[in-house]
Length: 343
Image 1 (cartoon, rainbow, N blue to C red):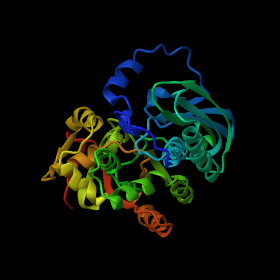
Image 2 (image 1 turned 45 degrees about the vertical axis):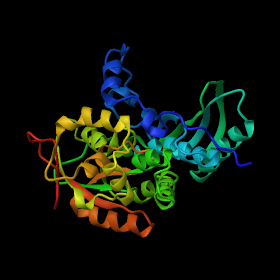
Image 3 (image 1 turned 135 degrees about the horizontal axis):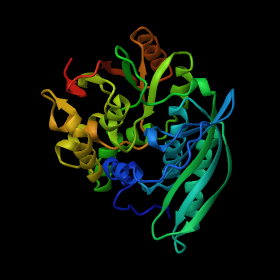
């Protein structure tokens, strides 16, 4: 009999706490003495922590885990690992080691756990890393992910907020996987749409990051639970504004149909509540707005690069088979942080 995982209320990055709630908690934590070797910490809203250990070496640390968003355990393991590994690439780093994080019901078939971890292990190997152990606890629901360590040169870190006016914004994957997975949960998603979502969620950002190393990247983040617009808001960081050309944003087309049918996530609505005040939509459909607020599991990289280098970078990303697109540009700060328009 084919083994399947039971869906939980929120799977993948739809299960994350909202950005607003998280910010209120983090800002109250004691900071402790400042460590000059901590180049990037949690207070920067960046993708991972970066700690300098030598003049030419820094370690990148991240972890991510969540409940299932697909029924097949092996596929879930691949998605969860791909998602956790992504933060290393978003910082410009190289994956070195990973540790499993497992929450699993003691009464559930251990073959399911084996398939989840097999999927995760394969993605760590594909990333060029070593799976070095992990930690497990008994829980009422399945959750899985990785703690990942990578390395980066201290002078070559990609931060998420150093974009410059005049930069173009490049997105490397299609949006809409959260909405498609939600539709699938109630048996409304087509097989083609779900296959497209799974292919996207299991594609390592390693390949996009490797292409980026030949270019001067001003800022980079991966688009995950806070949505395209949420992560774009963090990228602006109160320093800049930007314009998004909605017709150039890559989208799983069926996601727009499902959004029109109100197959939406609570996390998407939290994203709208948190980021919406910073966004002005100019004649943009409800469905497309929802896609832009949709929490992405294992989403693509959002890259800020000079206009001069942007076209060649886009060409190189397309040559390796990614559905990348120039989706907008960074401007000088204005009263409207993010304008979403038809070009």
